Amino acid sequence: MTDSRYLSDETLFSQIQKLITSARVRVAARINSELMTLYWSIGYHIRQNITQSNRSEYGKQAVEKLSKQLTAEYGKGWSERHLHYCLKVVEVFPDQKILHTLCAELNWSHLKLLSTVDDSIKRDFYMELCRLEKWSSRQLQERIKGMLFERTAISKKPEDTISHDIKILRDHKDLSADLVFRDPYFLDFLGLSDTYSEKDLEASIINELQRFIIELGQDFAFLARQKRISIDNRDYYIDLLFFHRRLKCLVAIDLKIGEFEAGYKGQMELYLRYLEKYDMAPGENVPIGLILCAGKNEEHIELLQLHKSNIRVADYLTQLPPKELLQSKLQQAIEIARNRLSEISGEPDLKDS
Image (cartoon, rainbow, N blue to C red):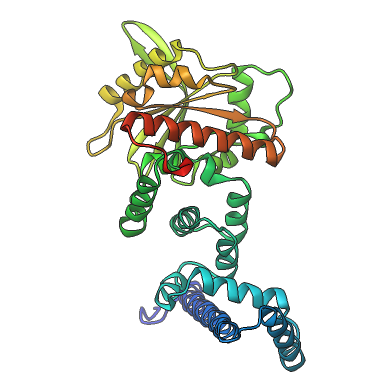
């Protein structure tokens, strides 16, 4: 008869495995914290030394000399570039208390990338989304290169609104819809030909669903494709249906291969009211509609007042344009949106004054 006090080989291995894994996680976190503190402290001392010198060229000379001394003493890893990053991180994150808070969720590679974002609001956006969605440093780099901030609806709002929404995210982990939805969406991974139908687009998205969800945002959960709804004995089909965990609402997505048309509003409103009546669970927020199209007329969007119906319209790109062209387009869209907001509020646009 087997003594119940003794564990099976598998159970014993499982318990020991958990102990080792847990210890490794704690050690890695400790190492990460120590490294970030070390690099920050190095940057702090370099900055103090440069500040105390009145010579304009001293900073460059000091970093160059220090790099040679450290490399001779400790080997590779102490290049001028690395020391400049130490200095830059201190300039961007001067409060060491904030650094200790970040150590639990970000690593040195994250901080280096964030320090390259000059605009403080934009940097806060990337930092909080990175912490929330637990991006790797590679993912953070991709988001910055892909101009995620400029593509997110929040970028078209006044700076006070952006700062407020980011603060709510930081303090309470609550996302606003403007921090979730983007325009345009990059669907270049679909590999579509020059001519394709809405069915081709839908099929390609389903085939590449994981990458599509990553482009949408990590809190999107896929529910259905071509969801059938019946109204007065007539059948309608919602192209894609998702649920957003943090917004706590259903998101209906309608795919269009041409430019936005006014009739799309009524169609989406019908979908949303049906979902609200028959599919919305207790505790959920009202559904949101996203119309993805190959192009849109901004004045149509404005006159139809789609926001009042909880509908958003966004372009999608199946091929990425040159970065300069994309940057120009996004900046133009932000300026148009902010000018309209200032007209509505009756206040001047401070960015142009």
